[in-house]
Length: 335
Image 1 (cartoon, rainbow, N blue to C red):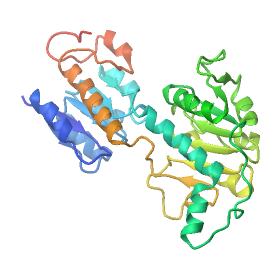
Image 2 (image 1 turned 90 degrees about the vertical axis):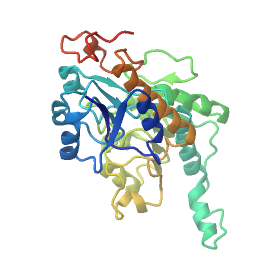
Image 3 (image 1 turned 180 degrees about the vertical axis):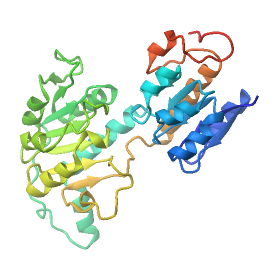
Image 4 (image 1 turned 120 degrees about the vertical axis):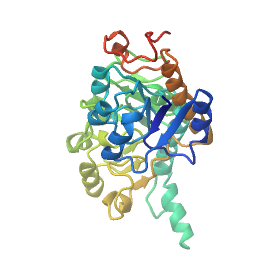
């Protein structure tokens, strides 16, 4: 029986790299056309592995995937995969937690600088024939301001390192942080402390049930009127209606956004036309180097599982000791 892997979706020009690597081990690559649940459920019935970027891999799809040994995420977050169902079925789930760290941290910082110096506004003004350096008010000097980082994983730590040469004071909040860090960031004891104390708030938390809409109207009201919010993580960390309202009312000054609830958002979405918003099209992760790295590491995880080995980044390690663990051949995966 010919083995095959199903790719639900991808955000780069081609799957040539995947096809080349899998061909070397006799595995076919099947690509979904729409990536909707019905199509994926049908295609999954013949898949030995599933690779997914943003399309949801639901419990229904996994239950149809009787041959599937692993689901591999092209990325860091795993909120589009039903990990509980995969674990129950004995399917290994992997991700790539250490890619695009430079790209996303650069992008977050670029949004901060654009907002602080009104770069986009000035660019549009001069392009339209204007020349007025006072048109958008007088900005505050970046040095001496406080940057609050919500979540303090690999990307947030890189942002903290890049912030220090600019003279920013870095404050970090995560439930797992209890003492001052070696990255030069002070630790906030609560989200409220961070929001009240920060001039710029940058979100880097994973999306879970606990973090969904962690920034709503109450939290935005805690922020300073001159404060800015930057989100290069997950859209659902922020209640978008509350953010629109806060920007219109002047509760906060500005927002830099790379992720939206619906992508692309409707043309008439209010955040598209709000003057105090700089929006980019989920581009923070994107570079030639990051995509090459992402493809190599995601495919590498799948190759390891299909070869009867444990991949480096298992997000549900409890499945490895489960009696239901699906195996390649007759042996349990080995490290």
